[in-house]
Amino acid sequence: MKDVAVIGVGMTKFGELWTKSIKDIFVEAALKAIEDAKVDHIDSMYVGCMSSGLFVGQEHLGAVMADYLGVSPIPSTRVESACASGGMAFRQAYFEVASGNSEIVLAGGVEKMTDGADVTEALATAADQDYEVYQGVTFPGLYAMIANAHMHQYKTTRKQMAAVPVKNHKNGFNNPNAQFRSEISIDKVLSSTLVADPLRLLDCSPVSDGGAAVILCSLDVAKKFTKHPVIIKASTQASDTIALHSRKSLTTLNSVSKAAEKAYKMAGITPKQIDFAEVHDCFSIAEIVVSEDLGFFEKGGGGPAAENGLTALEGGQIPINTSGGLKSKGHPVGATGIAQVIECYEQLTGQAGKRQVKNAKIGMTQNMGGSGASCVINILEAL
Amino acid sequence: MISPKYFREIPQRYRLEAGKCKKCGQVYFPPRLICPECKAQEFENIRLNPEGKLLTYTIIRVGSDIFSLQTPFAVGIIELKDGVRVTAQIADVELDRIKIGMSLKLVFRKIQDEGASGLHCYGYKAIVI
View (cartoon, each protein chain N blue to C red):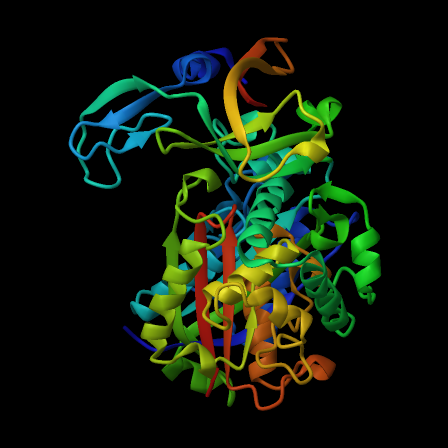
């Protein structure tokens, strides 16, 4: 397998993009990435998208986006793994380049969630329709049950969970592409409206429109385009039962720990060598559990770590979600995994501005689908 | 909920029918075609003991459109005596009385109405014992 690098990135602003269609959003991000990479063509592309069928009534996105990007007849494939669709699209692009099959490949992600669909119902299709959703469970409900179990088992507190969105909003304040560029307080989180006890509105990532794209090529080819390629050290994936209730543990996400184990092995590093991570904070409790399952903190240590600033940009042990995370940056589900890679790229090439992690050499992205039934992890390194 | 899809799930929703692996004894609800533990493909049809304990729960305050008139309602994960875990609403109880570890029992209840056809859809909910 060839070494593979990221040589250019582009994304739209995340938020309620009323005047833009799903096609406009994807093409805008893709054009920015192509321009940033300074490539004159792409050989193949992948489109991560969770549910354009339910959100806007359009499937067949591979062909749709190749057409509107003006690159037909190149191969173009849509990749779906619920909220991990973007991360999975990136991984497929990685393989296509690593195998030598294509030279320059675009990995993109998109979601258009504000066109009027029942978003709660559409997102719930990532859970077990017949044995979870049928009973009335929502996505906040599933993570709320993880939160209650974690609070019961590890004495994680409500205030510790609130520290996650407070920190992520502080980071997102400095991200020009973020949906919410406003700081919030612990009190504001704890007094926001209940969605699914104990989770409140400000524990939850928002409904967003947005697109993101990156350009991959082999390391040899990358050197022709840039002096600062970012190399992909690992790209791994794991799965778990679709229903939360079928898992032996309700407080550990096995897909996350399994994908992480493989990623550390593939990159030949330990969790301590990761300088910063973009993780899937779809809900505050998710960042806490994931920070444990990635090996940054011991089980039960995620809550205290968040509260004590160990995941903060300044003075943290491992800065998590410097982009603002899904909570502040926004969570157009199919685009999220690609946007995480973009934050890593900007950090590793010193372009993150006020969000810059000092001496950032190795970054990680962790993107998951549903209540953790699928997870994809990438480790990237500045060359 | 389209009626053939609903019809197929009746043995599980009305009678808690599960599959017990003939090789390793693991019980699956709903039944499966292959055992993830031992890969055997032969199962005995059994009915679950409806009693169990609450492992975790939440109160749904914002539901999908079809459940929005029922909010707020409680949903939990219940470990039944056969070791099987299910997700079900917790009914007939003051929401602030619900506690992890409490003993519950699955009973037959109406769950939802299918939007377009008006089909009544039944299944199990948990009550306190």
